Image 1 (cartoon, rainbow, N blue to C red):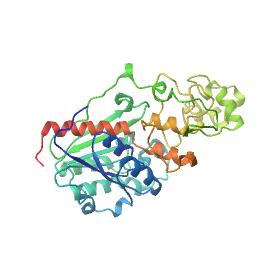
Image 2: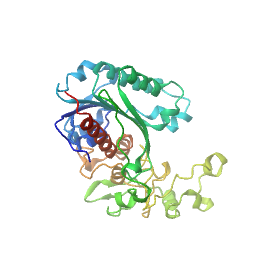
Image 3: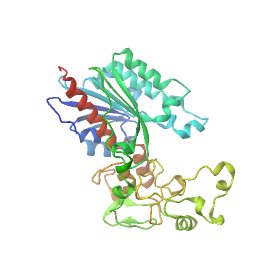
Length: 357
């Protein structure tokens, strides 16, 4: 891991959610100043884990002056953000009722870059933004960076290549006003990817609908009697295509439904897991079945597959955990490990250039 020299790094995080990106940067020694998000319920997790101020604000109402005044004049000023990815996701490509206001949020990020002129910028989003045709959103964002004399690197990141135990693919843009910047090289390859077993294999066994008595977050949804029959009929690494006919859903018997082979599937121990989504604790929403136990994965397992540490706090009272809300928090988050990769990139870049602040 790159080492700090004399520089102080300060971060403002736009669209921060519960703070996965901020937490990854914080773990690399960055000082997190503030996060901004329109989901007020994210405030507790963001503030307690990142020791930073959570601002419940519509980003359209935030001014560059407000952000710029938070930075110390002698710091490396870092502005990061993951504008909501739903407008660019695979589902949105199929959904004709798109909300144009949501994909305009990346333009708001650009506006704040123009007003603040941070030293370093990082943006993370889904790779589908590369193929988004409603507006040239990404091209316009990159054109703004060029206009403002930032140099940048655009990468499609396969998360297992950086030690994240899920097959998530993300687009990462890093930019600097100081000179050339490149995302650090991958840390893992197919022979040593972090696996489901390494991430969650040590957790205590629980049954469908149960909560671990020593870990309130290690709880899973209760399966219906029919879905319990289905998971019991699902072999290791298998899915609904392995079921007897009487258990198969009508939609999967139709031609259009046969391509969804991963739903109701079990994960495999010695491979990375699937992409954690906002519905990752639901058995019928993807390959979210436990490799061996007859249930969907728990909130704790989803959080670990997203690389949140065991001591990350999601709620003030974790005895009263909302599975739906916690799944949304976890699925929407930037994996903290990806935040670490971005932090390493920034440190290596600054140490190489040695800018005068």
